[in-house]
Length: 141
Image 1 (cartoon, rainbow, N blue to C red):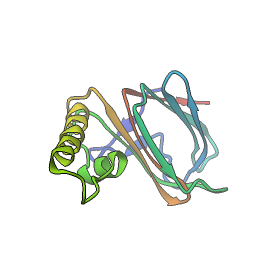
Image 2 (image 1 turned 90 degrees about the horizontal axis):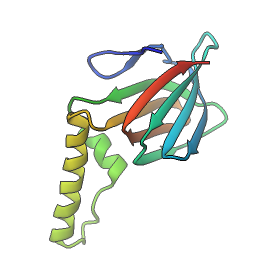
Image 3 (image 1 turned 30 degrees about the horizontal axis):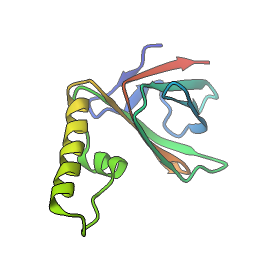
Image 4 (image 1 turned 180 degrees about the vertical axis):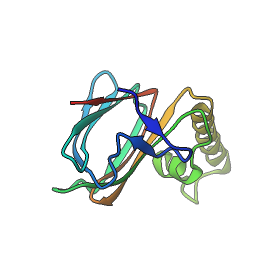
């Protein structure tokens, strides 16, 4: 299915705002599948293949979606990249801190060039997640 994102990277078609994240599945080879339901009850599968990094929290009985953002081929949000890839501990030696900073910059560059895609599910309630992958597909079920 063709999907549409706006200039800010927010998924507009299908519109899942105030819909629900109903399932997350990690499967081989390196694939994350999110099942989301819109307000009308339509179920969609968001498949993120070539998954390299994934962070999720607060999965609950009801997981209300605020926004689903998809970023590729443009500058990713630096705070999101840092949250996903971690911050260096203040006591880490400078050489290791710089190495980690370069790693974050390199991953951000791969998103900027379109080699990787950053997917962020922001929630109104419940689970939020961030995923870094090679490709995103959305299909209606």
